[in-house]
Length: 303
Length: 147
Picture 1 (cartoon, one colour):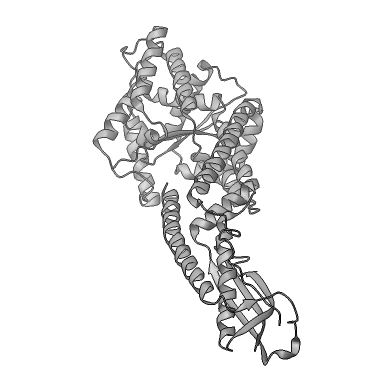
Picture 2 (cartoon, rainbow over the protein chains, first blue to last red):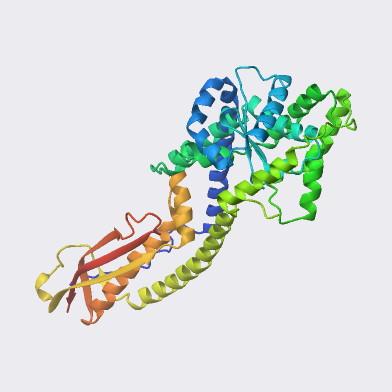
């Protein structure tokens, strides 16, 4: 008869997870830290590369989406669009845009309080924003700001960063599906949802201000944008202030603009150029047409 | 933002319930292991002095255990950087020991006995499921021989 013993084995040989929370914190912090560092590096790389990409190439990238952008903007309003285009054509050379970087402005009759610049020098200005501008100068400031994004190649930076991050995330998670990349590169919706950093916004403010001063000889109206929108946003919470969502902290922007205008001797209190007389009527008409077209979908701002 | 909140809630729930379940399970495992100490298990294929055993039969015990969201999340992070997946170690340790215990419980019904030729098989039953948590089945089986 064989004798067998059954010794008690110590616990924890096959289970070493004594501090799961600590492991979780370390892993999360480490992975997020590495991810942040990697993405920052990619972002910087995109920023370095973007201005070196020929503008022609950017126009080519945007070409497939122009029709969609046009459609999204709603019915064409030739008179308003020609006026806005004229304003852009005066501002762009004053801001140092060469003839090789043409800017194209679209007018959208939607009530969204916003204006945006996207790939290929395409700008969209919404009725909701124009209606809140007291003078041509104020409108010119917004457009100068958006033109500056084109000039600084911010949409390319933003897109490049998005694409680089999508590729990095795909590589990291091992997801072979194109979903992420497709969202960043292929969807038309992206053209109106590019986001820029605070530094980019600040530089755009500054360049826009320069353009404004070069065209009108003074900086009147430069502050209206943030002053009007900031004040209005504070009083009506329901309004879709998309422009303020993507351009936060109006107070600090006003200060920066004031300081720059003062340093350059651009008068902020000069008499501004009024908006054309026919404009309010044309805006109202375009709104009515939009309503007839789309039955004023939920996409436009409640007014 | 909402997505992050959902993940945090799932992590907290996973941690709370998961670690509670693990603690209770280990307590039960330790108690039952103590109670079943007399049923010995061997990896030897053939018992010594083959002819003195009155009865022999196949006994088995199997168990399915699932990871919680917290464990799966930590394991996922671990998968990015490599290293010991400690969050799954407890899961597999418990599953193996539970399977052996269930096998022993079955064997004990024969009366005083030993189990030879014990094998343990592990299978992941959440393979292929995209967002499935890690779920494993562990099967322990062997030949119980009674005096």
